Amino acid sequence: MTTEPAEPNGESPTATRECRQRVRSALPVVFVVALAVLTTGFLVAGGPVPDQDDAAERAAEGTPGAEADRQDGAGKGDGPTSAPFATLRSAGAETDATDGTGDSDGASAAQPPRGIVGPNESGVNDTDGDGITDAAERDIYGTDPTDPDTDGDGYADGMEVACSGSLPGADPRHHDVFVEVDTVRGTHLDPAAVGRLRAAFADAPVDNPDGESGIALHVRRSDTDLPVNGSVDSSPRPGDHNDLRDYRDRYVDHGDAGYYYVLVTTEAAFRGDDYYAGSGVNGAAVVESFDSPKITSSLLMHELGHAFGLGPGEVGVDEERFETAEYRSVMNYNALYEVETYSDGSGEVGRDEWSFVAEDRYRPPVECEDDDGTGGACAAACVAGQ
Ligand SMILES: [Ca+2]
Ligand SMILES: [Ca+2]
Ligand SMILES: [Ca+2]
Ligand SMILES: [Ca+2]
Image (cartoon, rainbow, N blue to C red; front, side, top):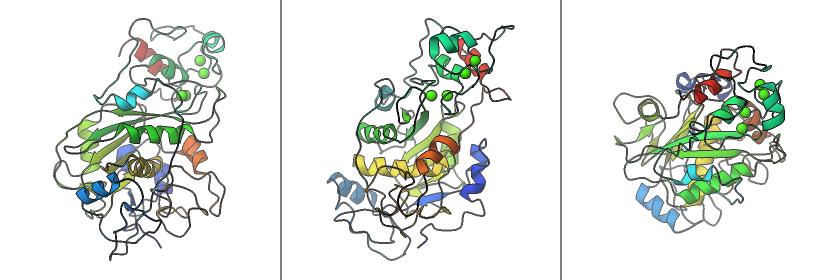
């Protein structure tokens, strides 16, 4: 069955995927996830998301069982549960996830990195225009002097090397994804949930130029205790503090550096219906706050999937047609809250969502980028302290 609430107004995930540089204009496209729960492994369909306190309580009780009582009526879909992970890639990014204070702008102000082409330098040999000289790419960084983005993560080599303030922990030879998270009053994001999420991405079957597999997910906590006016919808609506675009416009701190934006709130909604526990649009997502790190991590991963452009319309996404064994992905309502991974191409559905995430996902714009997308200007600006 198709569980999403309504047709996305003709703005299919596919269509929006083509608008890779337009986060805000894409906001109206919405995909949703119904909060589900698990327990002994059974799911019930439909019904409004349980009252937040109950849900949190049940989630806190630990694991399955948590939300079995989601019976109901509306027949709107819902989702299941989550699963485990391990391993974090490096300690560096860890601080982003746990500092809780917001910016951990670990800028290394002291010495600009070597080999970065300055803003007014000419005649420097930077074949690919990424802001690092050919010699430094070869001799210092081990990056490709003929490819402005050696690891294909959307950030130019020079930007990853020079912009330690806006992209702390970035590595030009390893795939990086940056997410900014704000929380509204009365909600929280457990560092343990962030740790699980990071571990899930670190385990991704994605190859990197540095020889290691995985994606480094950097979660930067930003504003906390934000005001909220009822439920927060992923679609724009009148009034303040009640839709995702409003929050993003007001509070995003790293929106010019290719970050995905996530808001943790008390009640998420999709087109006015607060049945859902979260929803995502290209580049941004809203999720409800839960105590269980596993539920939180799985829900965040699902909505980030939508923020990446994995949407309804793709077979199995936001549907209950496939068992977990047939379609092992957090995008499958029957696997949500049970697993914390995207599909790898195996199984009945066959779609390799990890490849999509690594290569074809929607990417929020990097505003300092040159028109040609090579990124040299970003590196120069960061070195110049701009
Ligand atoms: Ca270069
Ligand atoms: Ca390069
Ligand atoms: Ca890169
Ligand atoms: Ca990188």
